Picture 1: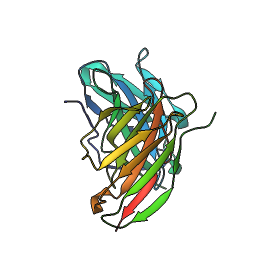
Picture 2 (picture 1 turned 120 degrees about the vertical axis):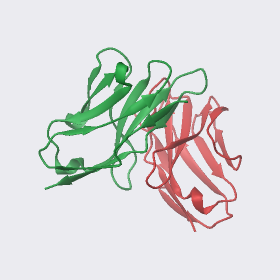
Picture 3 (picture 1 turned 45 degrees about the horizontal axis):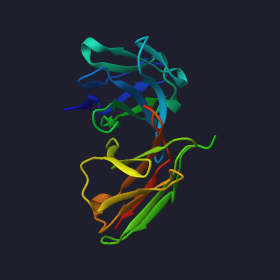
Length: 115
Length: 110
């Protein structure tokens, strides 16, 4: 079955430290992959996406992610975290046909940033 | 270009009531998907509409129903509300493999 796992429910980092949020997926074909950020009470904002090509993807707000097919992973990274990055982060897989094309989301990782 | 909009922003309903949530898709997008995001969870796929027809459904009971109109806007209807229906409901429109999400409607069932 198709699934997305975000192993870390909570992560705390100090401002200025590097960040890596883990995402593992289970999908039979090459997936479409996404990272979203959600601030409290807000909707989803797309950080970056991977459809094909270069496995290192650059996104907004200084984030990047690397698709590793051999590890079924799409981890999100940022070299230096800012206090405004505190939010919840969701990894998603776009499950292509056959069947309805829909997103399968992980359960999220809540990021806390210490001043 | 207008993005995806949803209304209302918030609403409070009583258990057993019915509710209708609305979504206006992004210009040119003929597909609308609805997701439910319970507190502390990732969004869960409810169903999708393509050119006014239901195009797939997640693991939600029949009291969750929808419509898509000729202008591709959409409604999500929930009958016989239960406390567990309290959630953020997200609408997303698409015309290919990227979905564009609206800000959501926060539904509280008391």
